[in-house]
Structure formats: C-alpha cells, structure tokens
Length: 402
Image (cartoon, rainbow, N blue to C red; front, side, top):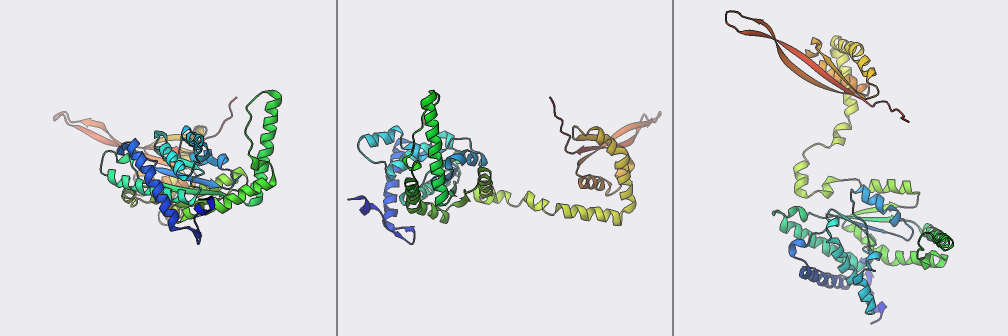
C-alpha cells in the first residue's frame, strides 16, 4: 500500500476513527513490551511533561534551557530527532525499515522511564502526528491509572498525577524563512572558519537552511502536518501559544506569563483541597496599602494624643539608631518606655514604620527583678520589668568594593 493510502482523512481538523484505532494498536503493543521489560513498579513516568513545538526557526533550541529553568527542572531536554539516531533507531534503519510512530513512541517511553526525568521532562518535537497525539493521550491515561493504583501505598510519591503543558512557539512564514537562511549563513561561516583554522568542529547544514524555496517548503510541511497535531492538544492539556516573533527577552517574558504556576492545575486534588482554605498572598496584599492608610488615618482621628507620642518616640529614639545601621539594613532598639503598654501603641509603631518603607518586628520580654526581701518570712518581692525589642529592617546601602 502506498503512503497516500495510509494517510488518514481529517474531519473538521480532528483525527478520524481509523487513526485513533491505529494509535491504540501501536500504544498497546509498546506498553506490552514495556511490561515485559520492566516490573510494574518500575513504570515510573515524569510528574510533568512539557510538549514543545513550533515552526522552523521559532527558537525551540534557543528557549529550551529557559523553559526548563522556569519550571525548576534540571534534566536535559529530550529532542525527538536525536532519539532517532539511537542504537535502537539505527538498527531499524540498517534493516531497511523506517522509524515510524511505533518506534518513536517506544524509544520515547523508555527514555522517560530514566530516573533523571522523574520530576519532569521537556519533549522537543513530540507529538508531530495525529497518531502520536493519540498515543500521548493513552500514556497519560496509563499514568493516571498507575497514580490511582499506588495512591494508598508507600510508592505513591513515584506515581503522581501528571501535569501536561503543550507549548507552541509561533512565527509567521517570512520570519521562519529569514531565520532558517540566517542560520544557514552562520553555519557556513562557522564551517569555513573551521576549514581555515582547524579549530572547532564542523556542523552539518540543513538543505532547508540554504535556499528560500527549501525553507518555505519546510514551513509549509510544518503547517500542513504538525500544526494540526499541536492544535488538537489545546482541547485536553494546558495549552500555551507563545508569540516568538520578537527578540529573545520579549519571547522569554511571554513564556514566563504562560507558565505561571497555578496550584489548582498542578497539585494533586487531595493536596489542593488540603491547602485551598488558606488565603493566597496576593489576595491578602492586594488591599494592604489601602488598609494601612485607613489604620493610620484612624490613629490620627481617634487616638491623636497617643499617635503623636509614638511618632515623637520614633523620631527621637529610633531614627538615629536606624541611620547608624544604614549600611546593614537592620537596626535593633530596646525600649522600656511605658507608652508601648498602651492599647494600639505597638500597632501604631509597626504601621508607621511600614508607611515609611521599613519592616518592624516587636518582641516583648517580661522579667522579674528582686525589689526587697521580707526578713521575717524570707519572701522576696519582685518587680516586673518589660522590655520591648524592636527590630527594624530596610534595604541597606550598596557599597562598591574594589
């Protein structure tokens, strides 16, 4: 049967039933082989999968390290094209075979089982076909089943609910062609320098990086074949469409916005349910400034005399010490002033420092000091001594040291 006869039809941009069945057959065969080669408890897949796709020249290789760092992953990326030169893939080619979807899925799943990818993995170039999309769905289903199976066992931490991010770096055809040709020119100059100096290693040039027609053809292949597969991911996973047209800094800013942490999406439901009753910091701080202004105004309007005294004490007893510690950004003041025993006085002090850009922490210590001894009974009468330890933190001065 020729290649066209094997190509499934798309209905409204979706994968047809025949392709889904093909994917099920492929995945079941791959999974059966994994079950034979690994014990059931060794089928430990990454907690997070980042599926990175994009047009030729969109910057997948350029931004890979940044994306991994943004997600806190230290493992190397898994570049699908690199997997196709592994010994397994080469043996297939040596036998005259073609590295198709089954081989790609098989090699990839075995790679994902390596311990370094336990927390997460970035897949550069997967999925690229409709069959690979369906195999990905099957994999996620199997991981979820493993998660449920081991959830009440000591091995539960190794079978966490997976988080899937599909990220597409998009550029238009003109940008893609320009970047492919620029890459070709730069690699030609590099190889020429290696020939002339003998320093360095020559790099293989893609034919598509050498002519406008070839570069344009590669972009069209991406739009016609890979684009549909990538688009279908937005229906089921966290989908990030990133404009990659601009300079590197701008694209990285776009990536960070897309990958902003959301606990409700990434935590296990039980974990999230345990934590969700605690208020988010952003919800507490969003009105903090308005609340601070309201409190300070209420001090002035309702407790004017006490407020005036606290301000005066800060000015006469605290500011001088704070200035002497301007380089370190931290000053500690001990005070026995009885004014701080008044209701609201400590709150006033903290709020006044906050309004001026400082962060004050107050610690109250009560000690008992012998006052007199009853000579007849031997009983010692004590006097309470209250000491307020106020720590004032602020941004210290930066000094250039030679």
